[in-house]
Image (cartoon, rainbow, N blue to C red):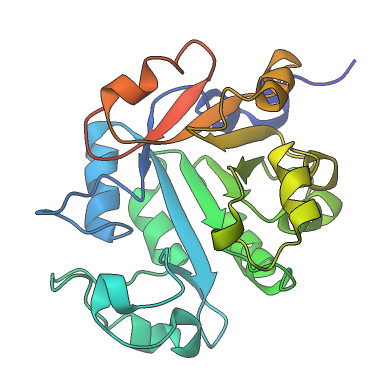
Length: 254
């Protein structure tokens, strides 16, 4: 008999369903910036789960930051991957006292207070280095975690080497203008979730416009949990709540 999700992953599995998950922490335009220690502290204090983004610095450290470019959040030119972790740790976020944190210091702050969804920003064709560094950090963290991301080959890396890591495959509409690195055939296949066979995820994290797709709902009916993202208004959740198991939210108190 196969093990249940709880038997395999313990409390991390239970936290997939509740509480709601704060997108890049509990940030606000006039408060703590996204993906900052302040936003993660606020999410912990409010009792939410946490979603955050990681990518590698020039010297191979896992940094918590969403964009490939530093411009939007820091005003700096250049890409995060071109700076060392020490340099990034001195860069202020949106003019606040908050700076770009490492994944290690982020998890040290969170501890066992929140479930953490670690989104790997692994570019297609560059699987391995980020996954390895994140795994090294996660195995030393006592709190509940899972790994999420869009790249099915990143998931396959974990499935082959560390199948005990709870993973959720991100997917969305795969628009042409946002995915020029994929062929039209790949985009069509990904919209139909054909990459699930490569990724072998334990749950799905679907964008609002794709959460109700026949393909996503079919996987849910087979027992694969489905998390919807990113809910920015309560009314967006209403038509989804009976067909999804949890939400990743921002801009309101879920």
